[in-house]
Length: 461
Image (cartoon, rainbow, N blue to C red; front, side, top):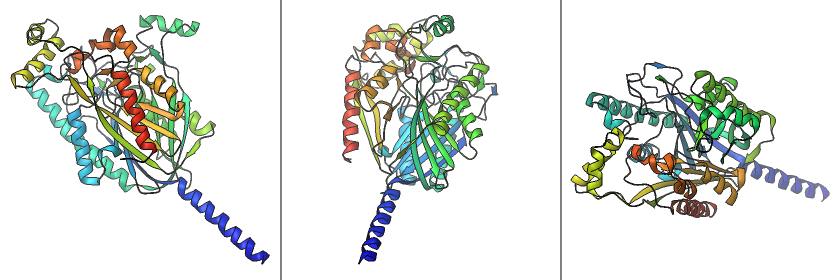
């Protein structure tokens, strides 16, 4: 009888161990492909360039990480070494992924690193770039975008084909080179202010890290983020800027690992000082070191193999719209970007379309196990959003990406909108929207994130 009890208890313990093991076992696959233009193309990010790219400092990459939980539910994270993508391209990519692989929109997050030494990407930042190009140059951009789209589909297929049993774990590190660029001017004062401890303004120095390891504990992928503009470099050589160098360092340190970067809410954060390749490499090493400190020297937390995903679009309101007469005056402006936006708006009016009074703003909200809330926000999001969401939700367990799914404009908080300046409204010219945002957008975005995470937590569609 005693032997029978012991046998039953042993079986119960073994069965419990198997259940625990199943709950922590994911299927995961990662892949990458070069997207560096082979032809002569104009670069994105700055309006003052006078010629196309003339060299390559690093390759530009499209990378994919596919995660599948214990119930077979999948999620795809795409990371792109690009300044951004617009709504049209984002929708086209997601539609073809759904056609080929059956992944719905809520299962896909597209993250751009926002490098300013990548190519013009279709009509993203159209008044700043595309509209000022000659017809042959526009054609070259369109051809590259078509080729890039095919490459993205290929890298997703490769990641799915490489899926295998894996374990996920997470941690959070820190890197301190991001500086609030609105509060610390001129840039030349930053080194002394850093030394004296007098840097001003909010910042987010967290470095969230998700490690993917196979059943032999070999690191196969690492997803990490940081809230800082990728604007160290401004020359004519293709490069992923500091995020590109960070990924390069991690992949060199961990053979056969795919390192994927997502930009956080760094719209008002710059890497300072900047403007040299030496500094870009330096910041890349510092970020990679912060990731490695989590991977190698801290106790990472296992992530239960349970993935829930949600995607929604909010109609964010714009402020007072300009009249046709105002737009016509702007079309004669000596500021070529203001004039380009005006021409874009006049084209809409002449086609019988009304000016946009709202914009369909994309929000992805995922939950990985009980451990991580992954929020992906569209546009160039200022740091206030990440700080508020972390405070109101789960601290470092809440990861907030910006520049995701559709980079349509800067996304100021209510504070930054009231203060004005570039991030508060001036930058709308370069994206082509007709007016600054209305003051209520911050609460509308935060409320929708909270609502979405409620759906995620209760497994609603």
